[in-house]
Length: 164
Image (cartoon, rainbow, N blue to C red; front, side, top):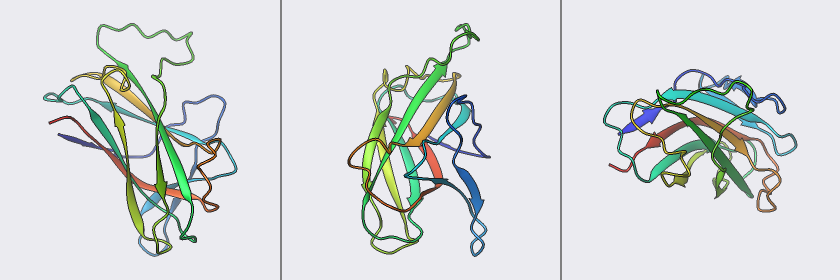
């Protein structure tokens, strides 16, 4: 089963700004431009559908580099799942699970898209289950030495796949 992100991100991080959301003037597609120079977070909120299979989860990130063809980007994501019986502690900053990362190389042609995949175990996905509300925070881990691509990493789309 696949969950596809719809709509724009919500910036629920009180410290770091969201990435610049722009529209490609040629294709009309929207993207989130993650800079190598600034810490930027974007949160998306979902409800996990009925039939979701607990187990290994994969976050697929379709992205591009608009002007360069070399270098690596370290993508990172954190998950926060809330079950119906969970209380929401409004005094807490968040209850995100630890960030998971993947290093992906810029496509060989500027502007071409590629897909990076971050894999989550059940605990790494904050024990996400059917009917949970969950939030995913996606960011570029610019503090990681492996992140050396000088261009913005433009996130075009992302989707989740469950174990089934």
